[in-house]
Length: 172
Image 1 (cartoon, rainbow, N blue to C red):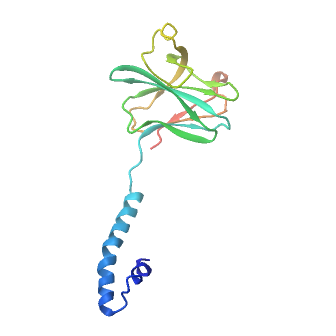
Image 2 (cartoon, one colour):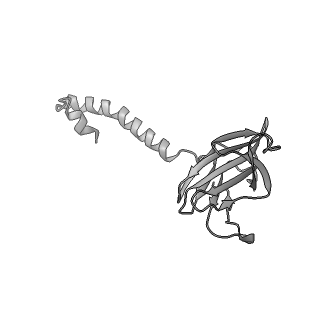
Image 3 (spheres, rainbow, N blue to C red):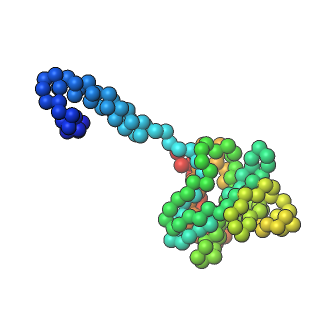
């Protein structure tokens, strides 16, 4: 592959052959090293949400940080696609998720009340949502078992109680 490139330098004699090899070896070593790094890169650790529906979904997440409870949103996830909400190894065992179907109005929720807002938000604290100018929404708890990576899949399938299922799994 590199030989056609080197011919452009006019190296066609026997001495040129040695020069070509001396020049090509570092390039070949670099190319092999880069491809090995791409193949052997470690699995990413993160919290991902996959939308298995055909509709646009808005997602909010809640978690406990060193400074206290945080809720963040909205991530807009197109149908049949995934988004990473938290990049890197997970620092908490429990994460909380709330999602709304932007087209049909359904939602994936749970019994844990946290604060959300109409527009993009990052809210500290989960109490007195309405008094602080936010809305209250019920989030579903996910016990990641202290795994470094986790994925939640939003589906149209009804779970027990008639609410859409949103199973979570260790994605390693």
